[in-house]
Length: 506
Image (cartoon, rainbow, N blue to C red; front, side, top):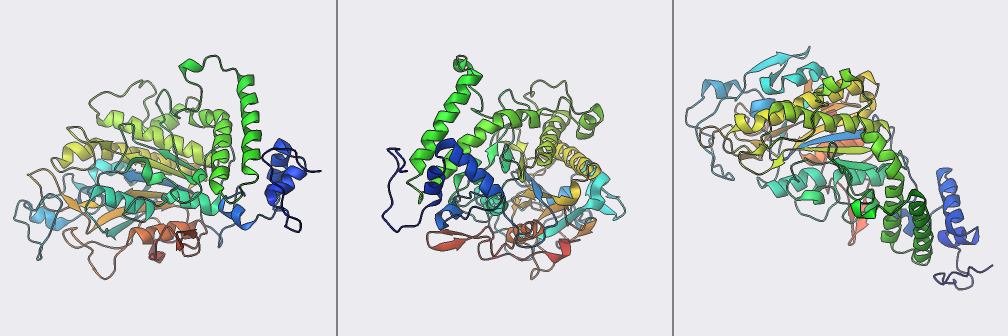
């Protein structure tokens, strides 16, 4: 029988029945939607070409057997100093205060070519691997044998916005999907009640480029990162009715969702060529399901005291003070790490944690031009406590073996000083590190030169595309095969670059 919906458009005789026509003719409305969900879950519903771009299936098979299922990325916005935290350089101690000489012309962001400056914090060895760490990140020593460092990372620019885009999206310009968006597109969701890609921004503000770092760009919109602010009164914006919506009852809201779902589906049925409609509908439906799932996932009140202590969380903290000290920074970053663990336990595929986005003075970000000790100190102690706790906690729960942790910053800082206590940008060499699923811990893959200025072997460097390719490989994705056709080009996260770093694999 012909559907009576005014939105339905009949197909000419002989045309194949579309996916949506089949659903509407097989029961229509929400019954058809339910049927689609069941058939899709059983792999019995074959989508059309246009449906492939709308990502109708909740999960997708990997290209090869994966070593991991999830990713937690920590992004230190503003450029953390590798030579003060992870990459020990005795030459800087020996030559501290002497005029710096790089043997070549060096162009820097703020001309920070002062004398050589020794590491701000003393280094000492940790773990069976004997890795040297700056004292300020000494908490990482508890898990150092699970971590693999990459000290020969190279970037393309010393400008924060471009370098942040590069690390986040694989490109230096806007208009490309964030890393987590590609994982959402490539593998799909493991929990239909929570987003596949969750972002935990710094509570003080956004890093360079703001939400464009986790925007879906030309991928379907449901793959964009969902922002959540643990510890705040309203951690997910607009998830529940505001103060003026006190007239909204639970039953009324359910009825509205049911009506909107039917209207949306009827509107989308004759417009199969526009995947934006599917993406928008999916976003609204997910928001409704999140009203139950997200608050429970963020509720750390039932976590035992020893777990809160492990993460450095002060459960009595009610508000952030104007002047941030290490104790509050530990509470802040540890809280995000604990929430990240709770989300990945519940099937979230990709969680991104941001640190250091306050441009007031004195700085509370990683962009330490004036004073590395003052600016890096609280942030470094906070992230080290939280990251160490997260690795320990995942390990004791059996989750570390299939969760990749990626620590990222957009570039490093120079071994020379800037105005005595600070350091300028160094895109020529910096450090990232990884831990977890499929990573060979207790290792260093790629060395910097004696100053930490450039890679030791300038012919053997590691790029962000290489790390992206490696993480994708660990999750069963061939980075050259996961593409999306856009403006006549098969785009991918790694652009036309990237090699899996075999030395990082266990």
